[in-house]
Length: 627
Image (spheres, rainbow, N blue to C red):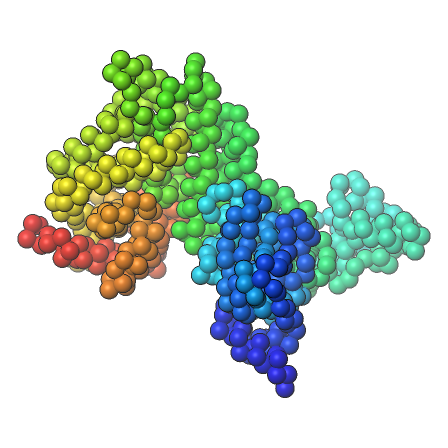
């Protein structure tokens, strides 16, 4: 027995994805691991250095990952993996890795990935989801992505391969094959037999095997083709393609119906295709947004975002990460719209201001194109300057709202937008407005609170928004009965099932007999999370899932309820998004007749979370006697 390999095995078996492997798979990896000792402050790799053929697991010690401005991006500790994303991406390292203390590393060759990790379905799925989430708990290092606050990439999306591969037979001459490639402007040609791929010729083969004189152009294609070909099924992901190309040191993959070379050829995927695909991911869309010069250009980018949304849903990426990705794009579009709107004005802004997204965009939950909800707050000015300053910001807001409409975000029917004089106010006016809503909590004011409490600064001065938040929480603190009223308001929509366990649907109107998933299922969970996070005086968390995560931390005794609500909210949000994409609408109203039994059961399970959180609110705020 290999004693060192046994010790490595005993360590790795406790950490994902190694704990998902079979005993034989993990022991094979353990025998091939290199053990490296690193002194404190010693570098493992540096920015712009060529990526090595290894990734690393920390046995003891700690490693810091630093960006180009020497800021610590992440700290990796015992059991954490780093260097794997870079390995799959190829090229040069984007981060610097330094030992923060004396460290022992396990260095694992990339050649082991395909043989022992990606061939294991559980381990492979873990890695794919980890690439998207990039959370510390998933043992995967964070990458810097244009300071978006989240990493948005294309590792999990299905690779967009060429559906019309150029082919020839084994008896085709090399000259004829080269002429076919030239005519079709491609860098490869697949040799087929009875529609099945048996070999491939690339530009490199022509250079190294023919141009060197080793073979004549009159020889058959079979003489210089690479065989057998590496094949994958139709649903190959970008990450799988990168791993395969890395392992086999090739630049082309053949796509067949079932992923074997015994099936008909359906397409060809090249390394160049991967590069092009990466140009159409969320990060590249953000870059395009920054370069855009008109709302019309931004509209085209937003339409392409729908394609990203569909692909990520199809790959079963967690909906909370998808919502952050789409929110990052929406925020970038809004920021660019504001930049363009300011340039259109006759003069620059007269003082400091901030643009707020409210409602679903403020919570980072706006996945589909819906109507606008926004507001503007500007720095206090003297009475003599007030009219002029407000006039400027109303004109600016009108330009912004019209431009967002061109992009695809419809104008709010209730006019809850910055171009409305009621929602374009100075800091003092907004403070007084919120104070009025809080101290006089009638039904209208409570409704406005539920919308405006979920605001997020999209553009402008952070200090103004922080002052506004401080003033709001001071008002709540001085009038604590407000939370009781807000609690009663949060119970206005009971669990959306009747006494007979039937869905509660709309009684009349344009959506008669349809189920309102927003009002009856999503909003009760949103309202509850808002109420409970406000009761803890937490100002900086607006996202519903993040609110429940924080509540789990603050109230471990209620962890099961909050986890149930977070999971139910994500299931409902995903369901609404899928319905909206399928029906080309907001997904809010659902025709129950179109649902199968499985979908109905999933929805009903999610509704139990509404009941559990509302029971908690009744007890917490002593609301039973008020209902």
